[in-house]
Image 1 (cartoon, helix red, strand yellow):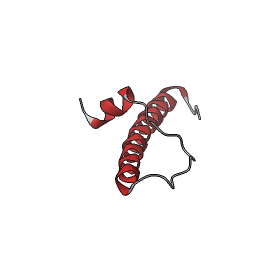
Image 2 (image 1 turned 90 degrees about the vertical axis):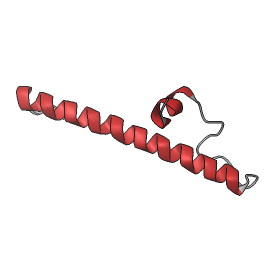
Image 3 (image 1 turned 30 degrees about the horizontal axis):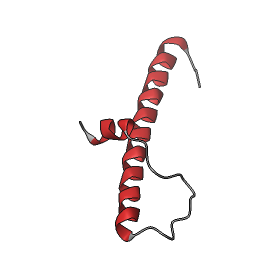
Image 4 (image 1 turned 120 degrees about the vertical axis):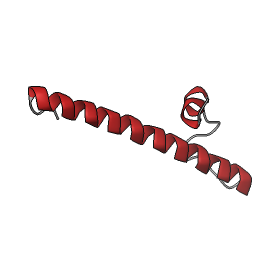
Length: 64
């Protein structure tokens, strides 16, 4: 299982915007890594959708 698949099967044990004051440096590092993996996954999904829309626009005209 690669990092992208792993991220899809795990839910983070945290929420965006929650208080970080009680977390250790290691816990903060873990969250940063998890969020970086998720950002990469989101960027790949977005790029795939843009490519799909661009291909369709080439056939059918402007879609977005």
